[in-house]
Picture 1 (tube, rainbow, N blue to C red):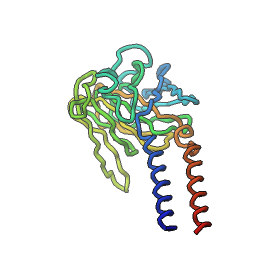
Picture 2: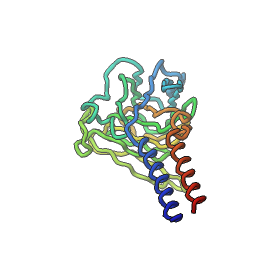
Picture 3: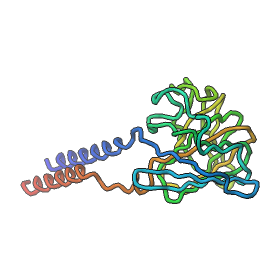
Picture 4: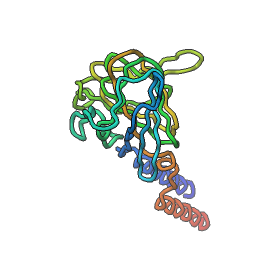
Length: 251
């Protein structure tokens, strides 16, 4: 009887843990960058800053590209994140509730390395890309493709048309891996890096005018990951332990 009770207790605790984990594996609102100002790099390169405003914090985002960019659109202009409604947008998915807001975009044209840095650690950054045809991005971190604008993904086409997206992992030597975002047609979509980050770097694989992006986050690392155990689960766990102790005393 004691062994049966222990097994029941273990199964109950595991079930609670699984339920708690699954509760977070749902579509979340993404806080997208509000890009502002102009080019902060006085040389031939390009640097811009924006702000991510989460539920409790303000995070400064800095984008740096020593090769320059095609154009920078920090306010007004064409909204390139159109296509479908909330359920069929190339930029929404089972993990992303909302497409990028406004028309903020950084348009790329040169091959080469670039980076994003954040003023504090952020959680699960989401990268939205537009018109990645004839080019690709090679990231220094692994990622998951969440959505893209094509019927094969159940989504409407993006602003410039339809296209698929896929990932290719390449060993570039010395145990260093590149995680490449590639596609066919006119890829528009989102990918996500899972975990805590203060920088993200990647390489545009070729010259092409133009392909563009913006970035958002699920929240700061403190907001998303430093979450105390839900009180109800903790209390129920203590109750189960107490019941187990009581049964042992009676045995």
